Structures are given as structure tokens and as C-alpha cells.
Image 1: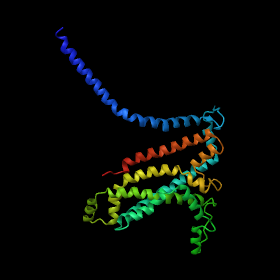
Image 2: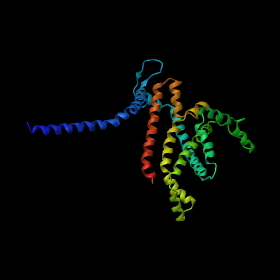
Image 3: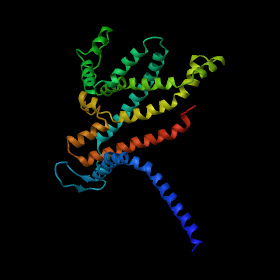
Image 4: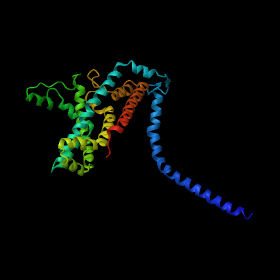
Length: 309
């Protein structure tokens, strides 16, 4: 009986420590629960619901849904408009992302090299980013007017007859891409400026002592140390460009002859004009897979191309 008392006390202390440790390990998860709940409600559940709809036929009005298996995906494979919109989405990304990134980087370097007026120029170049996309689309539509638009009037002053920007199938997507570039480069410029400010000035002094000129300093110091910012801008720009919708809806409505019909606008047409919810959600799943695959490829490439020091 006397020998059992110390053994019991040790067991009780061990049990208390175990419960205390278990309680402490659950505290971080308790703080995460609200965020995880919101994520589940607004992201996980809609995705699972949309994935289920992509295997059904539904017109959004009738309460009845019919399971059709892969019929919606087979329909897309034989739909010419889907392939045109997919090609236009890829072309729009290729036109807007590289140019908006290059212009943003050049402007960041120019603005940061100024002695005075940095804040004014940052404000001027950043204004398109915070401007209403509806207002921007209307203003650019007026500027693209073939008769009285500012662009063609300016071209006529140099003896050049401008095209019918938004009604010419060969020019319409380029015209929308110019608007996308104009609206996006200010955001890229701000991110590149923050990246430039994080670079140690001593690296430039050391490179200068070694005889490196401005171009060599830019190539061997600036570009490698801006690679994390460049990678972030690249990923976000590609995702944003694949989601282009408002300018197309306001300026061209996918025309002329589907020349500006991108994948997101085709999803909108299938869902809210033709009421083919199953086909629309199947297109959404394909868009998600494309963007996800591109993001994974970029993440793999970042291991070799991104330098943090």
C-alpha cells in the first residue's frame, strides 16, 4: 500500500502533462477554424457543386437535373466556338502578360532613377489600376471609333488611315489586349519598385568597383534579385488574363464573328444566355485545370529561375 502512493502520483502528473500538451497543440487549430470554415463554404463547396453540375444537364430554371456523365465534355470537344475561345484566351495571355510586365519594369526603373516627382509619376501610372473597368471600357470604345476616335484622328495627322479597331476580326483582339496592357502595367510597376527598393545598394557599388557598367549591373544584379517579384507577377498576371471578361462584355460582346470570344466569356454565354449550365461548368473545370497546370509548371520552374539572395 505504501509503495503504490508514489506510483499513482507520478501517473497523475504524467496524465496532466499529456492533457496540457494536447490542449496546447489544439489551440492553433482552434484559431484556424473560422478561416477554414469560410474557405470550405466559399471555395471547396462551390467547386464540388460545380464539378457535380459538369456531369449533369440543367437549364437553371427547372428543378430537375439529369445525369449525363461525360456528355458535356464531349460536347465541348466538338464545339468550334469552344476551341476558338480557348485559342483567343491563350493569344490574349501571350499578348498582355509579357508586354505589361516589360512596361512595368521599364517604368519602375525610370521612375526610381528620377531625382524629383517620383510620387507624381507613380500616381499617374497607377491610376488605370484603380479606375473603374466600366468607365475605362467606354472611354477606350470611344477612342477606337473609326471616324471620330482619338486614335484614328491622330493617325490621320500623319497620313495613316487607321483600322476599324473593334469591328475588324484581325484587329479586335489586339485592341482589347492594348486595354489590358494599359490597365495592368501600373500594378506591375508598383511591385517592381518595391522589389528594387529591397536590393542592397552595396551590391551595385561592388559591381561598379569590379568595372561593371549599367547594363551588366542590370543583367547580373537587378534581374536575378527581382526574380521573386517577377515570378509573382507572372503567376498573378496569367491567372488574371485568363479571367478577362468585363472589357469584352462592354466593348465587343465576343465579336466580331467570335474574334474576341475568350473562355470566360464563352462560359458566361453558355450559362446565362443559352442556359446550358452543365456545359458552362464543364468549361469552368477545363479552365481551372489549364490555370492549375500552368501554375504547377511555373512553380517547378521557380526552383531554377528564382533567386532570393
